[in-house]
Length: 192
Image (cartoon, rainbow, N blue to C red):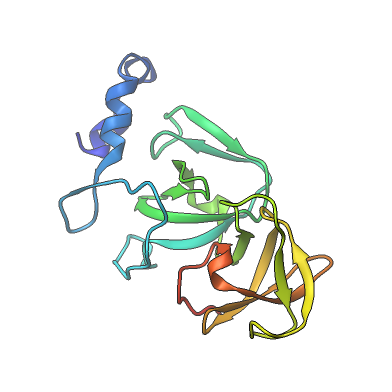
């Protein structure tokens, strides 16, 4: 069922057919193509044209301290959950009018209004891991002195990424970390 038809349903009809809505939203028609299933993991960057003219997928961050994530692209859709961490990196995986379908580091997917997102690049350190902190080095080299250790789940601003390393900055640290230890930047992506 096309997303446009789902938009016109009333709230009570959505509540009665919640299972159908979830299935329909997992199969969407992307610009210029056939239906594609929503991927459970992080996507690789592909410069596909979008309504905004920006590449999809792409990483952005949350601008606001409270962001409602909805089950569909519009205010008539039910709020699935609320983000309360400004600056959190989010992956935009689809665009529909002024709405962005997003995925978080856990792989959870929903829709947010575009003005609640920022182009500022942030990352989360190894959100898939627990335990051992990750070293942040003084330069982009595996044998460079360690400037700090960051626990998995720590969020930081991306200052620059090149050749498999990213320079991060936070309140009490600055330094370089291997790009494969971050969620919020694609493998091999360069960020200025």
